[in-house]
Image (cartoon, rainbow, N blue to C red):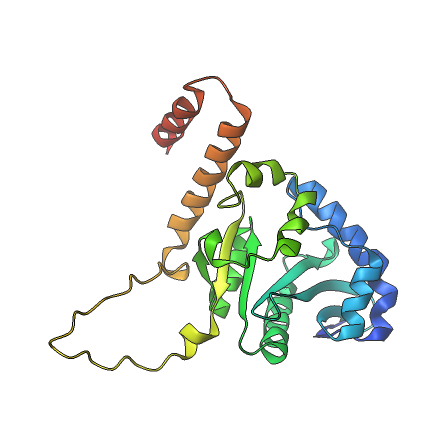
Length: 244
């Protein structure tokens, strides 16, 4: 009989999975060539104790996936961090279910918080977009130094530093509850100047464009970092544009 997968909020009894979770986080980051903040089993267990995590298990108790909530600036910003799925269960749709569950948990625990994420994965970007996230600049994320310290374990940390923390290989995405629930604007008086806010470009409506932009961004950053000779970066960019 095939086991079913249950995605639910983690509880203290789930702490026995902490070692497997952190080991898979490290292996996954190594395989991708990118990094996520390294977390210890004790840290993962603390999230389970606090009720700030989501876990996926099969009906026979096999660990499938995990994600947790982190809050910054006294709950002004929230990140859904450490999303990981065991190799045997990837490409089954369980990552989407975990993201939905952790998003709902974040909204329940921090209803007024801006929820953000940094990712290099188009699949995660698509899931985030479906949940209401939109691509943003790094300047719209938390300024809490504790969050950015987590990037030190990433292989691309030196790129982040060289860009004065304004850009890196990851794409920033943000869900702002105030934008989602804002009332319709009251028509301005004819005597007052009307200021129109430029709408964000919707990821879901421009998936192929974002895919090409992401590849271009990562290519340029890596080439610019590796090639220090004068003029080499411009030559690489021109070659890339010609190729596409």
